[in-house]
Image (cartoon, rainbow, N blue to C red; front, side, top):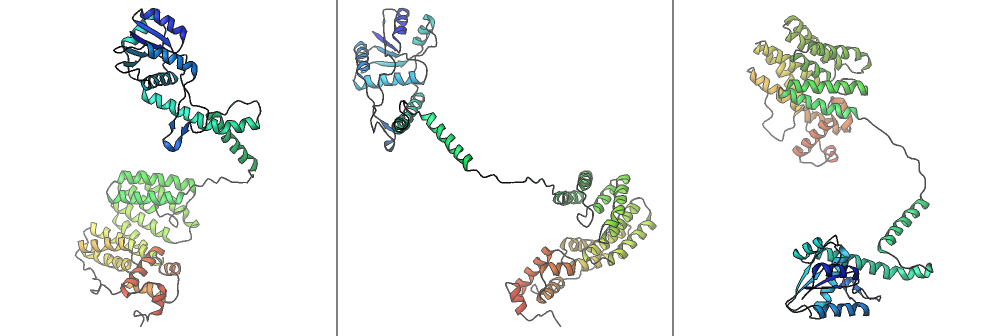
Length: 447
């Protein structure tokens, strides 16, 4: 005869009527065993091994189930379909297995959510194995109950007479609340400020670099879109050009080559209006170059020649060799496009010499390429790779005199980074390691 085990005796009677005389339906009356209330029932050091204890009443019910199970029959564990029900089924099977009452018995798990004949019959017709993950979850919960409760409950009984026991959830939650409350009590009020900053200069520099790269790749529309973003941010932040961010000259050139004359004129007027607020002279040079570019595109050759001449004169008054080299390079490109290759050699050669004198490698490379394109001769560097270039010799000389990197940069109108690069080349070529070694060494560059 097959045996079916449920938790409630009331369910056992009802289900027995549904299944008929071929089944014996017995009740477990809930859990059949538990952890004994003594130290060592859960041993974390032994992979959380647990000792279980069956009480007297549960022992009688388990004996009745073991007696009802017959060899060759089936045992259906039909406890509640939740975690505790799965655990009860596991306990029943484990105890009966220890009694060797399941030899030759097929043990299955059945669940149903309604006590109706159809639900019960369907469940018995579709049994399954025990759900081990659900059993493991029960074991973990029970271990925590024991470890937390067995440790804390005696403390609770001493401090709060009449209390029952400490729970695994409430105890941890209470500790979190108490720790937070302790932090609040010792908190010291401190004044603080939130500062919102808009670093517009950094954005302008990055967008300007992206726009220059777009122009080099002939992505002119993309470059114009970037210049529009730059102009909007410059209006928002109030940054003046070109002493802070030299973008207006490139913007006018980009607008001119894309035939956006109104935009180019607007930038030109903006730059002219800001001249009085700028401490440097380079804006006038940029304006002259912009006029020259616009005149060249519109086919006004006399206007372009006059504007380029004005730009060259103005650039000589600005103590900035890179700016002078850039003006000469633009003028040489203008002459080359006009077909005056021979005339273009001189401005290209002068631009190359100026750029190399201060280590402006990007300008010097472009000038060398343009000079070679018009058949000019490139002044070769010294054959000795350890010989100092003119720019390196000037930087080394000023460093030998005791000037700082910033003072050298200001004197030569170059960046501090360029000064540091030249000094590194000087140290390598002279076989020294630092400025201190340089100042101890007789200067071979002096007369």
